[in-house]
Length: 396
Image 1: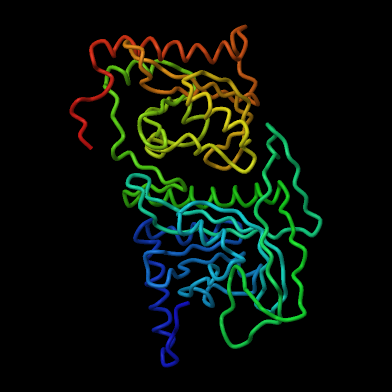
Image 2 (image 1 turned 180 degrees about the horizontal axis):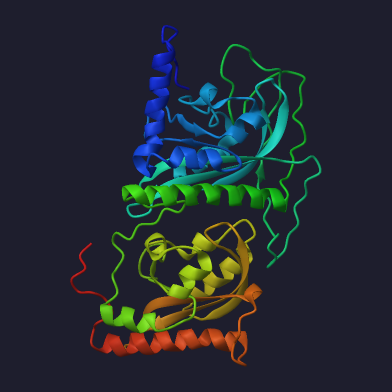
């Protein structure tokens, strides 16, 4: 936690907060702070590039939830990563990955309360640089329960619950914003609570809205940000002929390169960007797991993985998520695409939002999906004969 000198006056204090604000304004434009102030939700942003990984923004709703005004916490470290009780959060931060966990927190007056912490890194969409960490807190109601389902917009997996022993508050110092650890004899931890589907969706939706705002304002400075670590550097560029052929296919699909680590997306159709809300600039270089969320079935994902490894096609029902956090029942077909020599060149992922009740022109949905697969196969096989699948001049 960053220390402040007792001799510092109000001007020094404001100047310090101005330096913290520049962590946001320099990357997302001068108007981003006003935009964040207008967003609902209890959240804060930290900058891992600054000494001590300090808090650089705290929302008004966070003050209402915790009792800490923004001026009380700006420039301080959250102290959330101490002890085994929050090991999951610490690991997520070290790995630069999202994380949800139910945590027992303490307000400024010492009153305990359970919250669902949604932690999300914010990356430079082009080179994958970590810019900030976003932390959203959603209060967990006492009788919260989680319902499970395979393809229901309310289906979600249970987040990790972490047991922390409570104790009276310590006066005279800034308490942790997210959690505190205590070793007080004779006190037992409150029974952990489980966040409901609604609370999990609220946390995810709030985080996505904040990242969308950062993305919108970052474009004014030429930067594009994402909550997923994606980078198009090293991703092969498709030839103009293949791009032209793929652009004529109206279905929602992406192509991935199974020969590269993590099978990155190397092409996304217009219908896919319309369905998911992700632009091509954001999605290229990402893995298809960018559409996964709390309710996505791990069993179905494993089924897809097995078919990919055995170079076989599969059609599954999956709960997928758009960029704004909303979910949709996804009829997904995954199939290898072979070149003229019979080798797997790409994998195609065709997505169909069953909740939109699309018109299949009298065809079964599964047959409609295969239409995109057939069109891509024709384009790839034809162009692979002349060796014009990729741009030969692409060197990055």
